Image (cartoon, rainbow, N blue to C red):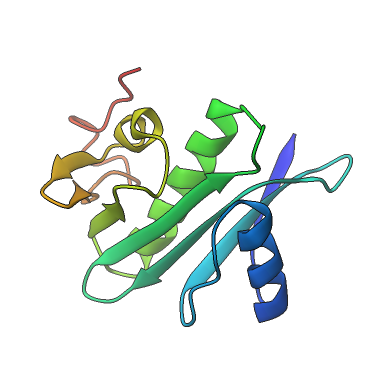
Amino acid sequence: MFKISAIQDPSEQENVAKACGSAKKDGFFAYVMRDCDTSELMGFSQFEIGETGYISDLKAVPGSDDFEAMFILGRTTMNFIDMCGAHICRMANDAADEKLIRAIGFKPDGDAYTVDMTGMFDGSHCEGHAVKL
């Protein structure tokens, strides 16, 4: 099992980002995913919310290979962005593995990936949001 929680402390965000092979982005929100039993770091996401959402990082700890956990971290991040009123979200091309990016619902869109999350998390419009692995 694992737990996903918001990172409140900028120094923790910096440390987690570095441990996942990235860098802290000032002004960005971040989630951390940790193993419930050991508190070991599993991954993190880093994102910002404006009129649209933007996910810059969806990274696992190097050497980790838990696709399902990373899928849940990605969808948790997307759900929060959607609940804040930004129903369109973009993701950087290098934010995560392409298979993961596509599995959580993003489609290529020029220099990034994009998803319309309208209805994705409220159950009113599930079509088109099914996972295709």
